[in-house]
Figure 1 (cartoon, helix red, strand yellow):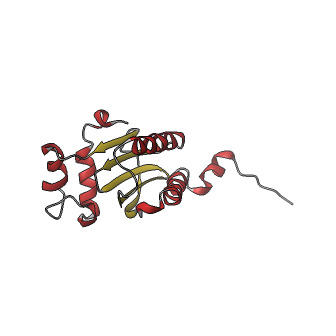
Figure 2: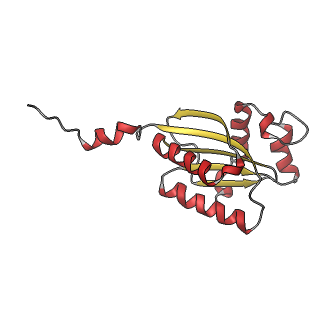
Figure 3: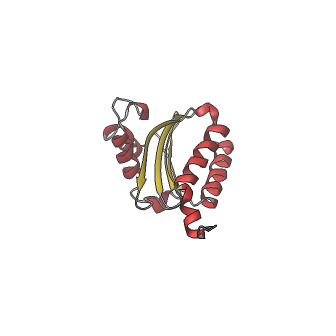
Length: 159
């Protein structure tokens, strides 16, 4: 009888650990205000993502979240499960999941959209399908372009 044993590097690839994935979702901001509760949640997720080698770009407005996060396939699946379990009231709508060659974001990036002229340009003129910012009216390609535009100068937005 011949017993074959897998090498450790093969075992690590068994669940897709070698495949990077980008997942983008949108959600209604029903739980978190702009105060200490939001700050605590952001710090919690920043640490969680860092510990699990996930990078993220998150745009928060008064009414919505738009988030793209990138990491290994198992890490992204676990993070999504955790988001759904811990924040069931936000009802995330996944708009895109794709395999990627490399991470686009660096760290845990956060942008709070305000009513400033600069933010209105991001949200309304270039990417929104209506007169008000509503990511639910945007195509996945518009959301991707929106995130890229918001985080062009990513280092200034790092949480």
